[in-house]
View 1 (spheres, rainbow, N blue to C red):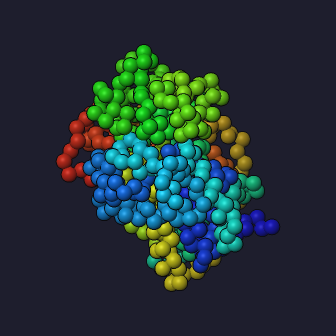
View 2: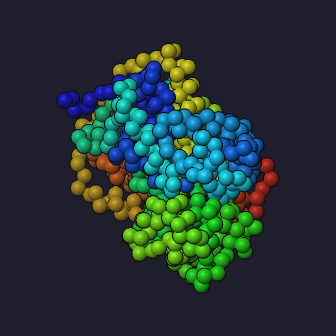
View 3: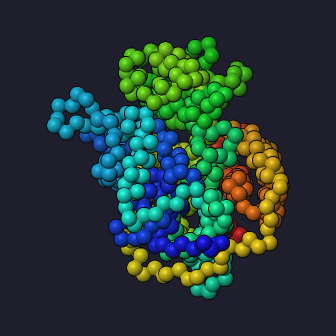
Length: 538
C-alpha cells in the first residue's frame, strides 16, 4: 500500500451523525458517497440525544405556532424565513425517518386503526410536538440510519479517520475559480495522512462543546468542521451563543450524563438543596422556560448559596409513568445509586450545543464553492440567540434533504477534481512531548469554563483571548514540527474555535439569549447576527 493512498468519490461527508448519514442516504441512489467518522460511526452527539425531534403532527398544533415558539426562544435573532422553511418541511423529513424505520413511540389507547404518535412537550414549546423513542431518541435515529447506510452499495464508511484540512484550489495554487477539491484525512489505525478527492464536500462534524471543561457531549465534539471551514476562508456567525444544558447529572463518575429536557416537560420540578422550588422566582413559565433562562437560574442559585448542585425531582409522579417514559434514564441512574421515582437527582449545567457555526444558505452551501455544512456545525439562522429543545435533530434532517437536493441538481455539471499534492510529512518527527498537548488541552477547557461560560464580562473575555493566543502559538509550532495525532488535531481545532467564540462574544455589546455579560446587561435595538470574516476569505 502507498504511504499516502488516495480515495476518489462524488461526495465526501465528514461526520456520521443524523445530518451526515441522512444526506448520504438521500444522495446514494445517484452518487458515490464516502462518509468519514473519527471513531465508531455511532460515536456522535446524535446517538446520545434523549429528548426527541420537533414537528407538527398534532391537529391542534400549527406550523405558525412552531415558528413563533422558535422565535421566542431565539430571543429576536432567528431568521424568520429559515424558521418557516424548516418548520414547513419538518413533517415530510421526519416522515422520511419513520419510513426508514425509526421507531417513534405511539399512543397505546388510540381509537384509530393507525395509532397516533405519542408527542411530548419540552421547554419553550407551547404544544406537544416532540416525537420520541422513549428517552433514547438519538440512539433510535442513529441506529436506523446506520443500518440503512450499511446496506447501500454506493456508501462507503471509513471509521477512525479524522479530516485534517480541506483542499481548495487557492490553497494548492491551482488557477481558476476557487472551490473545494477534497480533504486530507488522518487514518488513525495506520497513523498516516491520506487524500480524498471529491466533487463536493459536506461538513457534518457537529459542534464544539468539548472546548468547555464540563459538557454533555461526546469527545468527538471538537469543532473540527468550523475550524476547517474558517481556515478555508468561510465566514462564521453567532459563536458567542453556546447553550448550556441546565440538567446534567452531578456525579464524579458521570460528568457528562444528560438528564433530558423531556423530564421537565412531563412535570419534573427543579429544587434547591432544601427542597424548595426556585424557577417560579425567575420566569412565569417556571420549569418550562427556555434552556438559557433555566441554566442561568441554576447557575445563579448555585453561586448565591455556594451549592455544588441543584436538584431535579419527578418523584411526585406515578412510578409506572416515570419508568415507562424514561426507562433508559431510570436504569442508568440506578447504577449511580439514584432512584428516579423516589429521589431528587443532583444536577448542574453543562455545555451542550453550539448555536453558531459556518454560515450557509438555504441549501446548506457555504461561501466556498462545492462545500456544504449541515447540522450543528452550521449557522442557518434557525436557533438565533438560543436553540429551542428538539429543533436540533430537525435541523439536521431538513438541511440534509435540502443540501442533497442541491448537490443532486449540480452534480452533472460539477468538475472532476484534478490531481492534488500528497500530504508532505517528510520534515516532521514523532513527538516525545505528548504531555504538552494534554496540559494545553486542560488549560483551554478550564479557562473557557471560567471566562466564557454562562455569565461573562469584558475582562474575563480579554483574559481568555490572551491565553488562547499563547496556546495557539505553541500549538501551531508543535503542529509544524511533529507528526499529527488525534489529540493534536482536536486541540488545534478547539483553539481556533475558542478564539472565534471569544471574538464573537466581545463583539456583542448586549446580553441576549445564551450570551449574558455583566458589562452589558441590557438588550440593544435592531440586533443582528455576529459575523466574522477571515483575513483571507475564499
